[in-house]
Every structure is written in C-alpha cells, then in structure tokens.
Image (cartoon, rainbow, N blue to C red; front, side, top):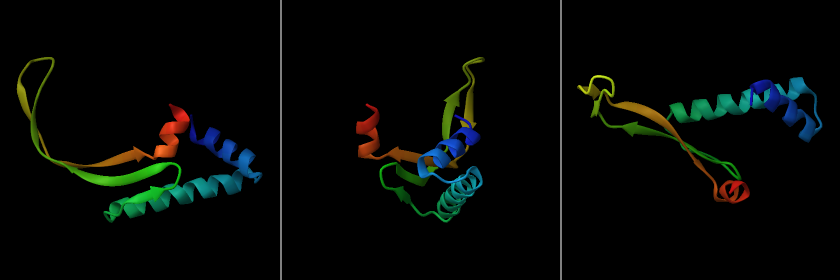
Length: 90
C-alpha cells in the first residue's frame, strides 16, 4: 500500500480532506522517527511498539562463495505488534 493510499483511507475514515490526512500521517512518522532516534520506545495503543535495538557484530557466510565475512554491529528498528492487532489479523 502506497502512502497516497494510506492518506486516502485516513481521509475517508476520519472524514477530513486529504491534505489534513497527509499532514497527520507526516506528523506521526516524524514524531516516531524523532523519538526512536533519542532511544525512546514509542507505544501506539492498538498498533504496537517501535524501539531501537543494537545488533552485535557477527560472522556470516556468503551464500555465493561460501566465504566467511564480518558483519559489523549496527542499530536496527524493531516493531512488535500489539496483542489486539495480532488477534484482529490472525
């Protein structure tokens, strides 16, 4: 689903125009991004939790050559779906 599709659905459900829905979606994404950058956990009731996690350095195998390669440590964003979202989908 593209961003324009999401904006249209938000506008339809909330009965607002597409410009307002677009600004609301952009604001939500901007807020989640800024909070995750600071290391905070963002919980959205009914949706889930966004959090930044550290991934340790590790060794991996190149599937094409079979050679071992070093994968450096990095930060990764994790999303854990809420219980209500899981129950609604499954």
